[in-house]
Length: 175
Length: 192
Image (cartoon, rainbow over the protein chains, first blue to last red):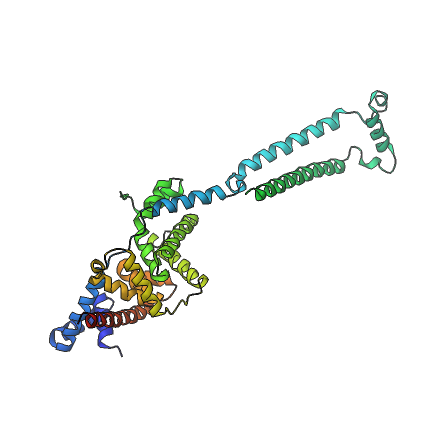
């Protein structure tokens, strides 16, 4: 069962149904207790409506915007870079390196016996290596190409990680 | 000067990199955010810190604002959670405020803001009584009367059902009325 005050507040706030609203309006008009209580609550409600908001300090907006700018400045470079651009650059380098390696692989006649005398010492060793029956299967196979590719990508990745770590530790040491 | 653009238009401009649009949003809502924070913090310095923190948080997650509710409702929910976190950090009770302590802080605040006699208007007594309420009661009254939020919207801000808000609002107004009458009576006694 709702109290008189509860019903009157619902009436003032406009949260009661149309029927309830009609019934309360009739009670306010007919009953003195309801009438005086209603006037009291309505006056209190109007007082609450008229409360003014507090004002923050003059430079409040400026301080907020400074805080936001500060937050942007603190953001790591990684979050500012467009990942798509990085992917395109990475793809370009990977394709270039792969193409170069393939070109070298095709151009340098390691397996050609007649040319071997004119090659530098290192390549002669390489030729010997590939002519060895145990390692011969590596020569000219895609397995070796894949192996070299993975090695290069891994080397680039590790160098990048190392340089990032070094940069981060340098930044951390700054006052 | 305040912008004539709607909150949503300002948000869109802000998301596309217009910093002054967000500054306009801050100017538009700062008074209410600060008042609501003051209901929890009870002193201007802490309230201003909370309010600043709220606007920075709101800017950080502006892209996640769904636009299904009013921006003010979303912002006030940030103020509510930030203020509750502040109370917990300060180890102040979130559901009970020591009346005596609050009263002293209110006196200090009134004293520092200049002429005490000028402040002792009807609005002053009301604000004083609201300050003595529990943070939850004070925030419900502030949201309903000053934040122009409906019962449903207050429910969203506080994370409760609108029926519960209705009951809480009723009780909060009752407590406020009692406190106001008590304070006014003691004031009259002092004058006599």
